[in-house]
Length: 83
Image (cartoon, rainbow, N blue to C red):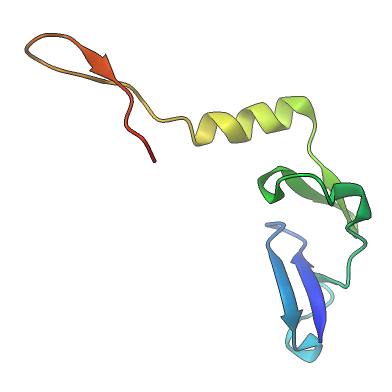
């Protein structure tokens, strides 16, 4: 059993059957020591290494998940939906 990280998406899978994962597409048992305290959404793959995104890259990720405020058509009051 191994842990794997997808080289394209940085998807992390724990305790998988190693033969099911092609090393061309997956990093098998990656060294995650440099990202152990980093939220997984801020991981990226550089070569065969998992690294932390730059501040600019993190900003792009955060903006993808930022909810858009909604305006009431009658009173123009705005609110931001949660989740």
